[in-house]
Length: 414
Image 1 (cartoon, rainbow, N blue to C red):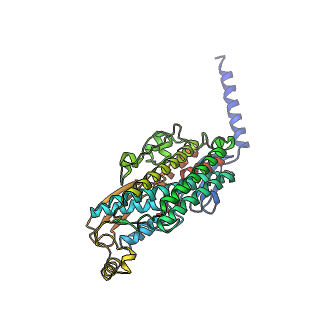
Image 2: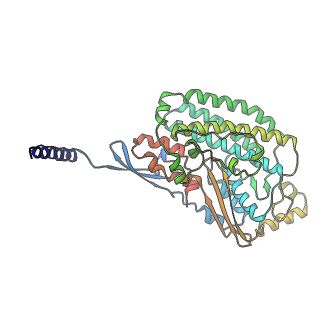
Image 3: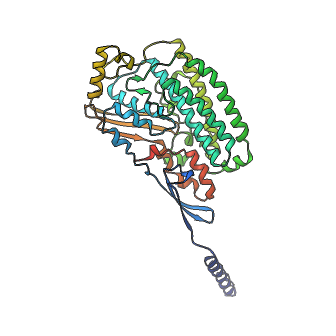
């Protein structure tokens, strides 16, 4: 019984401390960040619950673009949907072109010529390079590092120069066609690649020298935005986020499409799964994409051939033939006014985009207009665990974490 007063004293002291804490402590602050905010990229809103500068909770709100991509695709012909895919992830538009056209070709049961497949890989890897350069460069800029941002953007401009020579456009290229590509590789393209790539590699070295071991940059990334391997799998996260957690999942290797099984490249993986690992994975993937492009150029130089399927019911004729042959003009007229009739059925095809698995589920009722187009966008899926990644972190940690998730509003919009 002698110990009871002592226990009561301890309990009273605990209550007094709790009361003092409640009296002195303020309520959690609710901060609305975006959608008109530079760090939210103008297309997403964060409702952040803060205890001081510590993030207690986060609600991510998407859908501010109001594009309605899927319904737009269902309102026109199969061909007319291709420019809409350009505007999903505008940093790597060609990859979306490839994914959509492969899904439609699966319904049509057609296989494009081998040269076309190499050209698609070439164009897609250039697009991946542009996306990763934008992601890493913009992340540096939002962490107040202007110099590496300029290095990244200069390298991206060289990549876009190559895209312009290959496709005729720099950003939304509209290069890939159902059953082929817009046109073959220009004769001058290989020489420009060999001239540009040393400069691009030099810029990547400058980028690495300035930022990779920079103490401020490392401290801002290492240990922030952590997402475990188990949580990545639970949330169906793919792409650099999953590989940074140590899972070597890359559809170009695990489920090869086009001619990736004939190309020599490595899949970089991380160990921790934080923002610094994601940065390192993206940088190494750029070096691997450069290797892939060089192999594509070497193959294309040695192996001439057609770049489109020889089936007028599937592939629109090239403009040069339309302007010079009556039969081609008639074919073009019928293809535009009626569109290719895709056999009834459903198909799903996924590719490895810059952000992860980009898949298209398409359904045809046998007409020239898609009955259903559904996109599996990696940006939308990868954004889901963001509240988990930043809970308990500082408000400033949200910026690099969101940057390396690389959410693109065009993919997220529904």
